[in-house]
Image 1 (cartoon, rainbow, N blue to C red):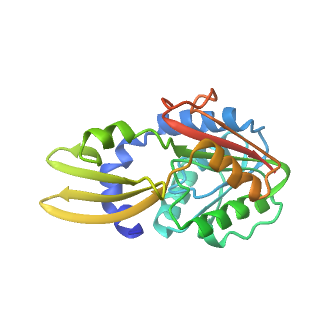
Image 2 (spheres, helix red, strand yellow):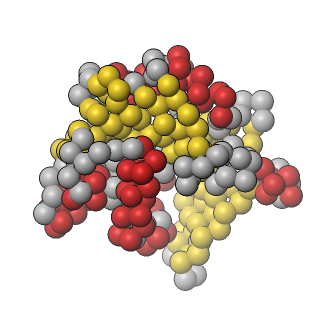
Image 3 (cartoon, one colour):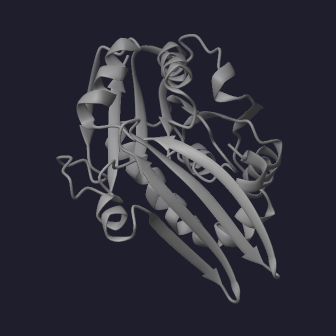
Length: 246
């Protein structure tokens, strides 16, 4: 995965304008509602990116630790926390190196941040989330629905294409679904000031029974799936949400 290309200056230019403070507030409210999080909980935001949710949650009374592999994002998160007058314990940690042990009442992985490695590695990451939680702790996982792009793939020469424009500049995301591996392989092209940058990544897609089984084998005592509103997950759902109980 081309991390630096995907989350560098072009990410700031194309993606950040849409990630408004209003959206962050709304999504933080969704986390609290869907996860059943009580104010005052010790909460792990992993990965936390540039802190747009962690800082909001801290402003609402949560004791937040945010981890990310990107020092640039962490610097942005700390600056925003200072501007907001809130405290978040930001740490430079890769998901694959999480070593928390029964330290949190809740954990969250938002914005399709799970499934970017091979299955063995992703299973290990899921076990690390479980170990980070105290007994009864809650882990809320937000992912794309595996069915979301299939109509587009079938209609568009087995590819799903997203195009984002900023004036004369464009970011083009081209995804192809490997049905046997249940994995999207993608290439993102950014065309900015007549310069083209290519970045590749792939992400695992899960059916509801499969991800529930992953949670069970990772040590969660219970897991359930739902859509982005907390309702029944269907083929029309935009997101696949999973709530696991330690």
